[in-house]
Image (cartoon, rainbow, N blue to C red; front, side, top):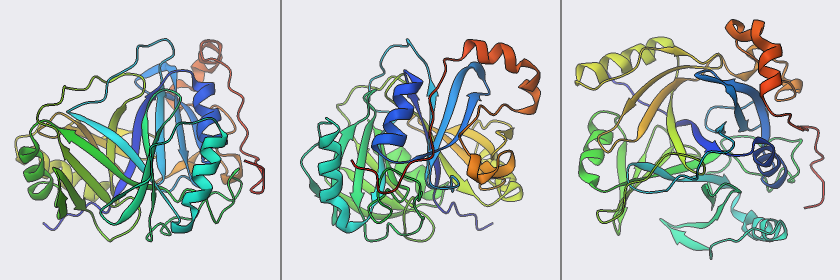
Length: 322
């Protein structure tokens, strides 16, 4: 069976203070809060989703908010960097904008013929902005604080770090059908599906590095796209037949998910493109209200009393000053 994962669906990381998280990703980076909900596995905490106008698969960065938890540590066995695509002529704009917000940036550098710089969010999550000629796959959110012609165009890639790279290289090629395209100085670049934003995965070999710990400021898991339920079932069968422990299909309301770990221990998810974030909110209202799954709606009052209040505005002007 010729199964193919077309790209990254979303990345899920861990934040501390949810208000600080909202302010940074909507205000500083200009993404849209497309869903304000709770962690289905821990309903006393927020699950916040950011993306483009409608949260297209491939634009989505999500956060579990764990106020008061300790900081995590980036290292082997983790997704260690999450990269966004920006238009090729917008690098100077972003450097000026982010420095104007008081952020420390790395020097700009070239990686596989693309211009890149890195920064950290308020919780220490490592982000990269990549000036990519193929950053046009996704339309930006037109209500952003960032002018549309400069705005983030979705995810570019993720970097996986492993102390032993070869088992994961083999797994990604043979099990997930990723294509190894380039290699340089211990970094392996894989392509997925058609070339474009959110269709790239880097694997960094770090044989002497320490293992990472998952908590605030680190990535919890990365999800790959699949077209729908039938294809997801085929993926689950394929992974199970290979002797790998994989979760049952889980209903996440906006997509269906299965979870498993690659040989280095990183948690992978395969998520369906449908039904999407407008399944229970009007497109114009995305992110404006706390949305609960049906099985928790009867607990709304008690959950709202536990969750910290959030000031959320998705009504930004695209011409707002930086």
